[in-house]
Length: 327
Ligand code: BTN
Image 1 (spheres, rainbow, N blue to C red):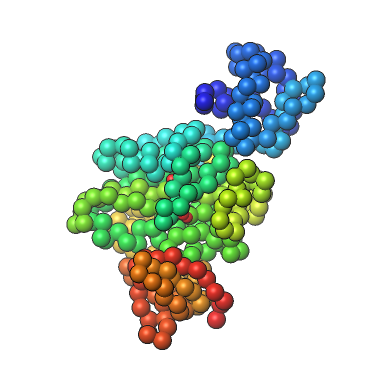
Image 2: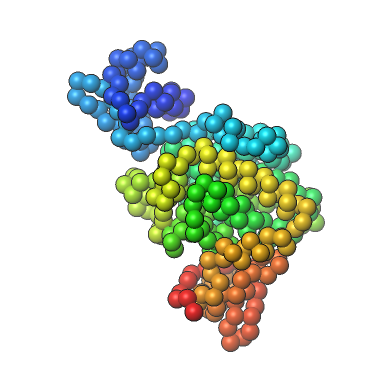
């Protein structure tokens, strides 16, 4: 796929006016047949391009592509300078994987975003549905002096950063389902995947990936395969900009990394309590060795889930939670 051409073609199309194939071809310096062929490619990516008889092409709805300048202008000066690199890709297998392909020393404070992912990774080996120009797929690398064993709370810090950023974008009522599912009205809005490599005693490098559904219409081809109830930012906030959300999330992540490095998890605990989507609920935690049922009682200082049942209140460091009724 000629990604750059598809991107330029998409930029030249509009939902507000119909443009003739001829004028698009003249602007892009190609034949009308090439325009037609690439319109088909865009349709294959799930972008609605209408052909109006005798007039030309029009987008079924506006599409906002990621844009380096728009994104950079949304980052406060200091935060922008904290980034070592910012890469915006059209299609990639996974933004986490792209960062992991970089040498460890180049990953620190490097950000990778993509319009789409062909092999987006979710937690526990699941696939992350990543349609073109709809959502946010963002990864940030960070080098920590401490070891892998001390970074257990990092996925929670990343989820908190994403929540704060989305709240600034106008989204109210977001909660986190331990360890880092972003939920709105009980439906999944986003998730985080943190992959850490390095020594148990340090240093180590983390690749922190965030996926957020920003503008994903119900009819998005392939979305029927998402195995759970989901929602997107656009269903709750009108006129939200993907570039603004991306900048806000990146800024919150950079700030949180600096803070977490300095203070550890303790100052984040209170914020967690305000976002805890499980507190007081009947839950089932499926671990590698079995199931634990009980009432969710918040988290420990090292980010473990506290579950109370007839055996007392115990900390659990890993597992998949499903929720029952509130108590
Ligand atoms: C989850 O299962 O909830 C975590 C989803 C994480 C998806 C993001 S999208 C950007 C980054 N790249 C990936 O391949 N995965 C993460």
